[in-house]
Amino acid sequence: WYGFNPGSTGQMHSIAAANTAALVAVNTTIAPCLAGLVVFFLRARVVAPKALDVCGFCNGILAGLVAITAACSTVKPWESMIIGFIAGFIYQGASMLLPRFHIDDVVDAFAVHGANGAWAVLAAGLFGAPAEGIGGNGLFHGGDQFGVQVVGLLIIVAWSGVLSIVILLPLRILGMLRLSDNFQDKGADVMEHSPCKAYNSDRSSFG
Image (cartoon, one colour):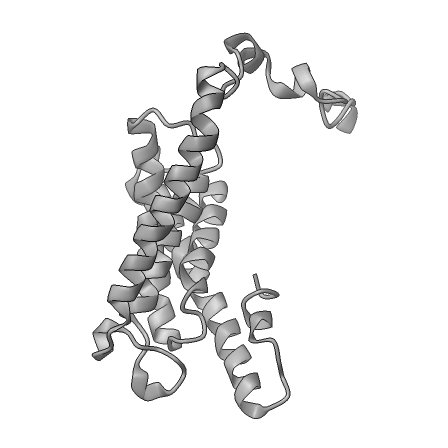
C-alpha cells in the first residue's frame, strides 16, 4: 500500500512533490491504525464472542487502508484519523450483516473492499479543504466535490452489478457457480490441491 499510495505521486523532483508523498504516507499510516484498533476493541469488548481477534484486527487495518486511498493526498492527518475511525465501524457492521443475508464471504472481502471502498469514494467528497491547496474540495469545507463522488459511486455499483450478473448468472444456471456439498464437506485442499495439506509432519514431532 505504501508503494501505490505514496508511489502514485509519480515524482520526487521537487519539495512540493516530496511533501505530497510524505502526506500520503502519513495518511496511509494513520487511517488503518485507527480502523484496526476500532475493530479490535469492538470484537474484544462489544461484539460476541468478545475475544481477541487477530484476523479481525488485520482486516480492520485493510479496511482503513481501503478507506483512505481515494483521499490520501487531499486530506490532512486529522481527517485521515476520522476516515479510519469510521472505516472500522463500517467494516464491522458489514461483516456482521453478510451472514444475515446468507452470503458466504469467508475472508470478509466485501466488508473490507466493497463497503469501505464505497466509504472511500464518499469520504473524498466530504473531507479536504480547498484552502489547503492540496486538491481537497470536501463538503465539510464548503466544497462541491461530494455530488461528483456520489454519481461516481452509483456508476461503479451499476457497472459492477451489471457485469457480475452477466458473468455469474449463466454460471449459476449451468450449476457451475458453487462447489457441490460433498466437495465443500471434504474441502478443496483434499479434493483439488496437491499436496492436500501444507505440513506432513505430525504435531507430536515438534515436541
